Image 1 (cartoon, rainbow, N blue to C red):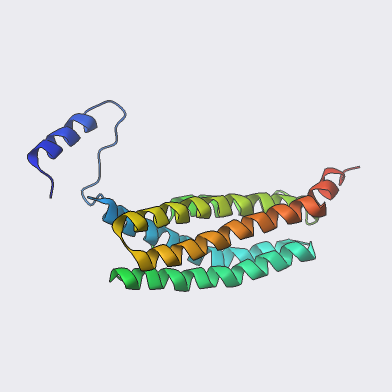
Image 2: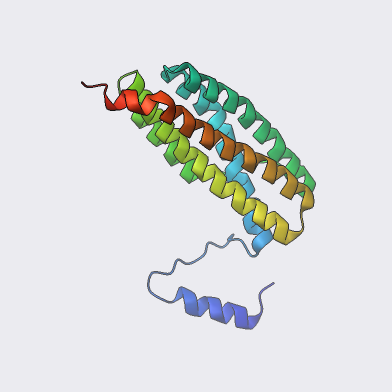
Amino acid sequence: MKTTNEKQENAKVESKKGVEKAKPNAAQGLRDFFEDGLKDIFWAEHALTKALPKMAKNATSPNLIHAFEHHLKETEEHVVRLEKVFESLGIKAEGKKCDAMEGLLKEADGIMEETQIGVVRDAAIIAAAQKVEHYEIATYGTLRAYAVTLGETKAVTLLAKTLEEEKKADVSLTEIALSDINLEAAHADE
């Protein structure tokens, strides 16, 4: 519950030009914001279970296809792990549309539409997938930090495991790109 002084301070800040007025159902504390972030990433992981097979189908590099198939299995486990996080907090596992992930996946679709199948598309898909991975790394890192602050030790452990897998997926994509795809794509039009 906010004190009168906190309400007055919020009113002063909101009256400044360019400051967004909070919605009536806005997060009141770190726990609310943490739970909201979990709902976002839960939606995002579900969306990825649909996007990764499409990326694999549009890739030509066997290593890249394998990386997407492997990460799909991990992503399915991420969903299960998030369900365990929700359970540990005593709240229902539910998603809330993640605008950031929706935008990243829409961009990935656009990249596939704007490139011919082959190494150039493979390089472009890697770029799109790494944007997704970086978003996930930032999200899981933040959620893990919130869980530490809130004393949610089970959530910390579960989120840290997923964070490490997301980092490994990003490294794997970089290695695939640098192994040959980017070089071949650079010379594709010669």
